[in-house]
Image (cartoon, rainbow, N blue to C red):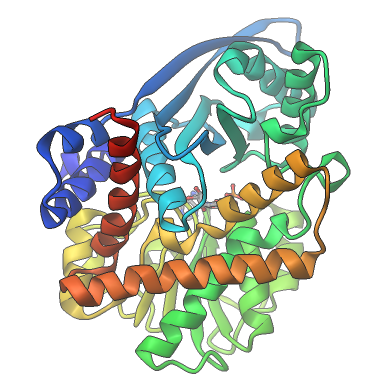
Length: 415
Ligand code: NAD
């Protein structure tokens, strides 16, 4: 059980399950079970009080057979290298599932930005690039925002990298602000991708999106944008939560008012007219869709049997453990696995990189049209595989992805 909650062990166990189904060559399997490269860094940062604090950070490049590696940077007080490893593996499978020409990577810094000033965060962001710049680049490894990082932090990082190189390199990082080469549609990309997969899952399960009830765990970038986009499609978002707790209103929540309340009080809890619930209660509410959009390991062997939703759409990375997968599958819950469900962000990141290299920018409509095509194709690649091989959707997504990565490794002659 403890083993299973180590996210990297979980990612390896998920791969093992798919490798068995694919009859993967044992040497290929051994190669794909571990990251190809890891960098551990110490970042000295001058704090506002004049002291110097040393932060630990990681950058893990899992596999680059299909192209330069791609993956976000997280600022989190409980960051561990195993979380970063797992996320880098998931990025590899995610990019392969949506068929974009990237490998996978991830970065993380152990820090609590809630206790830091903007100046300290900027110096930390620049310090991280000073440590990893040899390791990244538009043709090598392209970072992006993730938990507790944002476009401003990406702007500082891109600027630091450009200063070191001596020329402007917008394509080194995605998720930048629009005036610095960010793509239109990037802000909503992850949530929009989740919405496209939910739309297709609803058709298969037989749910009418108009009036469908939704509970969302997490009210950050992914969670808030999802509430807004789903409400616009007629869904009723009845519950949301953040790290402090959750709120429920069976009639549906006003997403904008909840956001204003969170901005003012730093939490969704205490929102007028809603019942207070725990994050745990939110996951087990009776509703059509439960969307984990916070952290990993949220639906586990402990609570999976209590899930009452028809569809679990995994906007977060690694929110459902392997043990929980089996329970959900037996219960007939339709799962949209993380690296399919939340691939909208990396897909528009890819579009951003293409536009930066091209020096030619698309309209928001063009971005969403291309995103919809990519996500819908990936959804049915996975769904068809699941039907054909009689496996759950996560195993099917792994089978699609691992097959594509293994083919690239084989063609390169590595294994
Ligand atoms: P964010 O930092 O904007 O928001 C995270 C939210 O989760 C916050 O509301 C926070 O309060 C909440 N949270 C933290 N711990 C919690 C807990 N224990 N219980 C309930 N809520 C908790 O992050 P984000 O960008 O929205 O990312 C959320 C998830 O989506 C992560 O797993 C991330 O890897 C994944 N994801 C994000 C993107 C993206 O483009 N933003 C892309 C792909 C995947």
